[in-house]
Image (cartoon, rainbow, N blue to C red; front, side, top):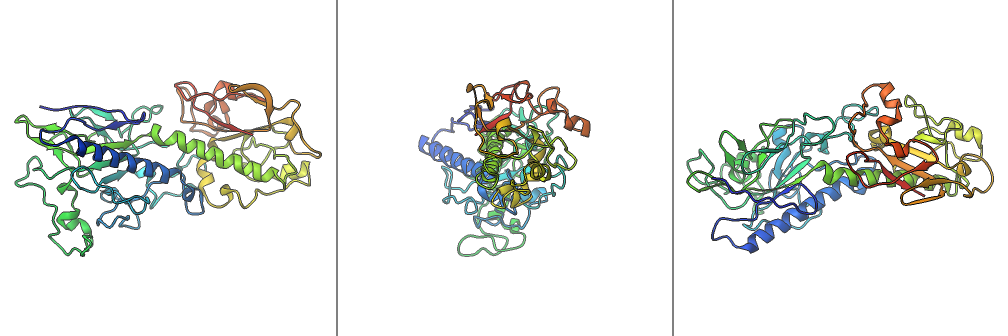
Length: 435
């Protein structure tokens, strides 16, 4: 009854059925696969891109869908779930007009936790609306047999399961289960511009812009024409799916963006932005030296004589120790240009070598920090660590738990001046950069 072929591409959670109904050639498959992969790369690039580290950005944000087939997000926000499913906003992503093997533009759905507009403000670290290593996707995905393979309800707090976004190749028209006719993709039910844009409010009143005319359904199992965030019963199902009579009832091809696709790249980008701010601070305004870290998660002000802790916001103790050092972060730092820093500051840790702490004179490294692997040499000036998602046993709910570094960092990164950098695995997920 069902045809299931699963392909894992590039280590990502990809569910693209390679076997096609007879009569459809391999070139269509190749074109569809290439379009989906190009769209996925562009979305990840958007989420980690420079604009999300600016005044109005939030690292990890993804655009709202295109509802009127213009190539751009139609609505000023995608707060309601119907607005989070539409065509891929290819113009906003800087893409060409991507098409699947049947000549159709791609469709796209985004999790509420990662939508760019409108976002809940991240007013304090760890609050609702903050997007960081502990943020999860909320969309459920089923394989062609109907089995849930990504659970948007995410019952396990330590294992991200729901996906962040889904890209669809809708394929050729077919008759949805329970429908009386094949899908209608014409510009009827309202005016369309010569360009094909659905020119009515809402555009989904026009057949050409209705999800049911592109996305398919397995009755009593899953309808791809809508979804609910955080639900394990209303997500999306990947094709090819056939009914008992061998008729194709789902030909939607899905490519997902999972936590593991996006978050490690995002954590590395956040670490790089933070390390860059430290470099700008030290050379030349900080006379080659770096500020104290903070042990105060209430004010995030620097703490005198603290060589390892979280990244500080205010630097009064640094200036008190060494008046020649700046009391403010440089305005050229991306962390000073917008509110994105609040999303990540709870997860940002920093260590400075004793030789490079606040003071006077030209610092050097007879004995500095070590990061091993890659090397036991004590020749590092500063280390920046972004803590990954909670691992088993780590708790981050209360202020006492937040103060305990063992709830964020792994054993090799808890004691100054020796640190470690390892590939992410079940017991280690710190992202470590250094100079």
